[in-house]
Length: 188
Ligand SMILES: Cc1cc2nc3c(=O)[nH]c(=O)nc-3n(C[C@H](O)[C@H](O)[C@H](O)COP(=O)(O)O)c2cc1C
Figure (cartoon, protein in one colour):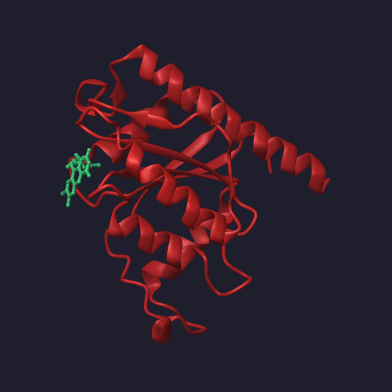
């Protein structure tokens, strides 16, 4: 790790006007003084198929794995779809979890953020994400649930319009950065 941590922000929504992606864009700007956040969209990543998970997996899946591997930490920004995470996000976790015992997510510091235009902030997707990520060996940061309700009023044009939300999320990212630093120190 360099002095400037490299973060990967994976958006769980494929929608062009996604609030999940917008939150990541807002975080990217707010984090500019101390970390590089690359916003990653999952459009084009095929559904996980073990038959295709060979030495030459589909290009978009290989690119996702490489992006995860190159990052010091991952922010999973997910919508809530029917009380869980989106299929696109679960699929990304599945690709990131393989090959068995060599998955890009193994040992990777991770932060979960959910949002919704509704009043619950996507909080019901959090447990599923945490559970699936625990299966991959990712090191999910222990932090109060980062859930953003009424997200349409909290972020506009790729920037935060609500200071409280910005501070709340940046507190979570600070915990992620602390985990990354701790790990780097332990690895020497
Ligand atoms: C298939 C589907 C299921 C949804 N289920 C929920 C839900 O369980 N809870 C919720 O708060 N919003 C739900 N929504 C509304 C989403 O929160 C809303 O569409 C949100 O903008 C999606 O995230 P995005 O802006 O990042 O695309 C659902 C939307 C879709 C399309």
